[in-house]
Amino acid sequence: MATFLKAQAASIIASVVDFIVYLVLVQVTAHTPAMVSRATAEGAMAGGIVNFIIGRNWVFKEGSKKVYVQAFRYVLVWIGSILLNTVGMYYITYHTTLNFAVSRVLVGVFIGVTYNYFLQKRFVFK
Image (tube, rainbow, N blue to C red; front, top):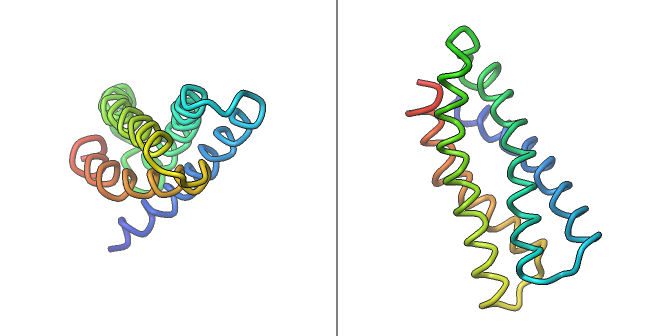
């Protein structure tokens, strides 16, 4: 349970970075679905780097293992996460009237809890 809670704390920190990058990009570009999707992907990249560093060194305490192996595995999971977040935002942007910021939080939390945590624990940092 402690690992799950630490992972959620790391996820929140990474999500804050992700969300700030996302909001800045959306605010300085057009609010088209394509730009919202691009901002989602770029925010996820920034948050992913933060999450990897925190996950490796604090959450899973696997800093002694080879970083390139973990980084490769993380990138595989990360690509899936970016795709799922981007598709989720694209779908919500076109098929609902939800505010883009609310949509981003909902999609991010869902993907973070159902996809990212389990694959990081069982594949990336095992």
